[in-house]
Length: 270
Ligand SMILES: C[S@@+](CC[C@H](N)C(=O)[O-])C[C@H]1O[C@@H](n2cnc3c(N)ncnc32)[C@H](O)[C@@H]1O
Image (tube, rainbow, N blue to C red; front, side, top):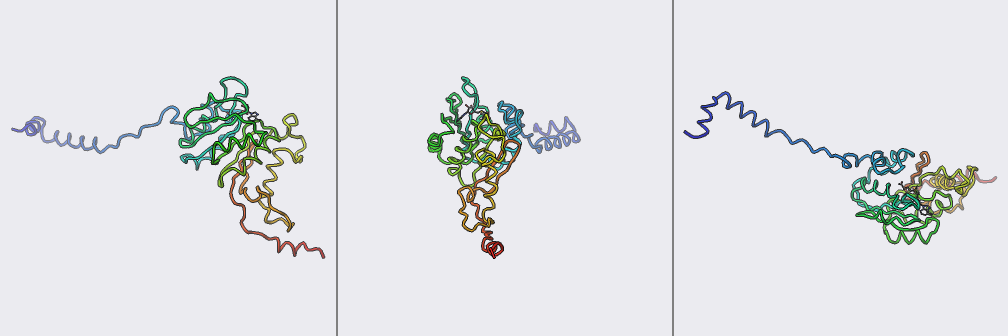
């Protein structure tokens, strides 16, 4: 008698059928997906990553909820991100929190940081730091030259209004079409000791510069037929203001809704 026949006669026909059904069920069961643990488990959630890496972009500030919305579509893209202000100021061995957060959130991106202090201890695979002063256009250009294409720029540096303006004027033209430029801590715009102003209409502050961009979005509708659109008029397609945080989207702002000829008649002096 074969082994199979021996087993069958020992167990009985009913038990053999039961065992067959059990085997079928076990084989058909899909393996449970492996649940990510540790850092992997939170790598889609910028609020949690900010807390993990100890950047104040969540907690002291409420920024990462907005970054999540504006950056989610880039999650698995290969691109270059530059953040000005690495953190830790002149304290030895301190800083790099946000660069590490970006590296974890964007697994295929190259992360660059620039700081007036030497932060080279933060350098690792996919993270590169540069020493540079954001108040100096040549310093900003030298860093941009080393990086190449710039897809995201974040200004979290000195937060002095003149520096914010210089950095934007220098680096926004170098941002890729479709890129995103972010300015953090715009509250300093209202503080004279940070080279801002209590006068909310003072033109030299960072908030005044950012608010002007919103008019530029509509330059095609200006009545003045001699108005010459600026670089930002032509290349800013959206400005999003949040509490102390602003996102600027770059793209070609020329929808062709030019109403100047019609407006010329409407406003013609009699
Ligand atoms: C608020 S911390 C950056 C925090 C970091 N981005 C984070 O979220 O973890 C600001 C950094 O800007 C740097 N900084 C100050 N003035 C600067 C300047 N003129 N140019 C470049 N970096 C500057 C400081 O050294 C400091 O490390």
